[in-house]
Image (cartoon, rainbow, N blue to C red; front, side):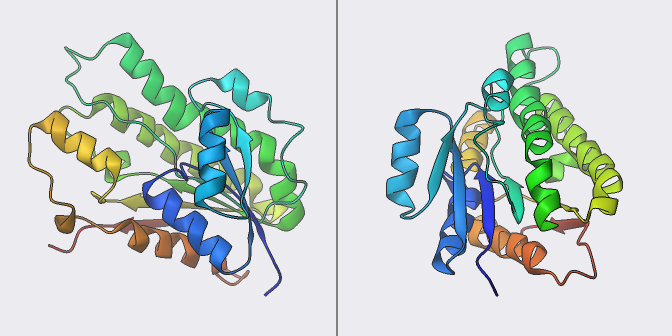
Length: 229
């Protein structure tokens, strides 16, 4: 298989970090989006050989500014970055709503639009790492779930729009996964955190690789993963 080129968000930890290393280990070219120059340096050191771009997903204008810096050809764009802030509708601030919708939905939409010429050139794949909350919204999860329900809508529309250009679109819905975000969620819920109870990030990364490596005659549209226990 020839060397392929990938652009990832959320590669600083969890699923995105594991995936970036897996792609580099097999010799693929990897571009990582970092929120700051300092963070870009850390990512480059942690994932030798990876290239970095700088834009904070919380700032759509910064994402827009990447237009002339993206690779000319992309075999995949993987949206693994995201934020979460739990709270009831009665309690959540406007800022919490804006941050989650911006980072989890608006930024992926903007970055995907910018990357489409490169994805079309390679007949590439867009992978959106969603969440079980993108299918069912539970108490305390309104803002996060709304952003993830929107991400599902983005994926479904994009898939229909880009199929004629050869671009595949896959949504992965992981249940609770042992990441730093999950540790934060447990703290917000007032629960003890035991990572062994939840999905290993490497398992989700393996599912993403399956979508990326799928033969060209099919599209893996939606895949849900739930903890086995």
